Figure (cartoon, rainbow over the protein chains, first blue to last red):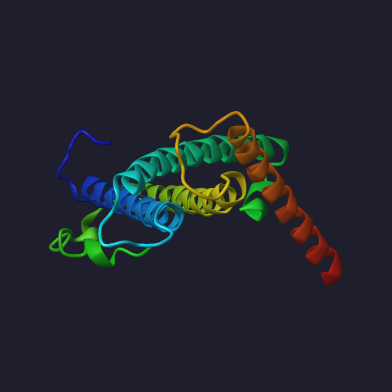
Length: 93
Length: 96
């Protein structure tokens, strides 16, 4: 980002990026839990069964694949639309 | 942008000491990061909606998206955005 890793500007930038990454990760964890718990543990027992755990692992992987697919599709669309009309992007978001 | 949690580690920084050029660069940086954050937040909400629609209920056995789920997710994103445009257009029409 800069040749001086400790100058105030770089510090602020780094902090902003860390906050953004943190927020993103927090959101993903929240969604993963919400979706996968609903699907994999319909009737909570006295402990998580092996089957429930396996479902959770598969569900997490699937959710993250879906996240990546959505991300690719969405970003491609934004780029396509911002090329068509430079001013239209702001409205679409 | 909320920097509430950041204040501690940035304490003692005097941003007034930055040059005008740095201030401007920083401002642009924050604008860009906010834009990115907005896009990521849309991706989260789209994934939420499309996962619900495209992944059949019940226990999940395989981690990868299968050949029905993957196109479904892609179409879900595109149709959701189309629908969004319809809403915006209709509101625009009503406003006139």
